[in-house]
Length: 114
Image 1 (cartoon, rainbow, N blue to C red):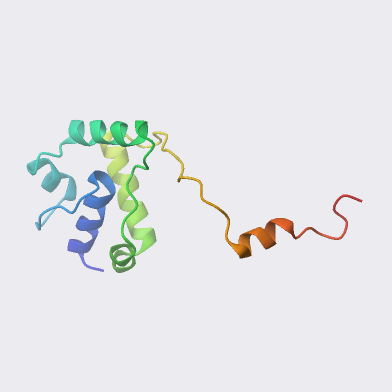
Image 2: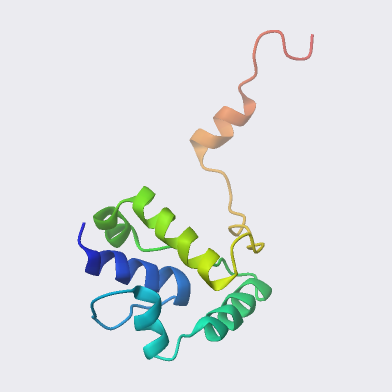
């Protein structure tokens, strides 16, 4: 659960790619790499309008190292700082239900429909 992992996860969430190593504030490091507030906002609108999900889902191994709650808090802080908090995001693409999910969909309480 290092600060470097948190910066990497935040970079992935905001830009869809890993940022170069660096110390300090992740948003400052991203701006130095050309990902200023305007570039991130433009990117987020492009991803959402094309049916993608933004902030980008962070790979599981990186998210586990950071911790889901810590990552969510950092992403929300960054979104607020960038003026992007509450922006609508596209839902995850639909997929077929697996066998367990189909079974649960068919399982109804005894009083259902009576």
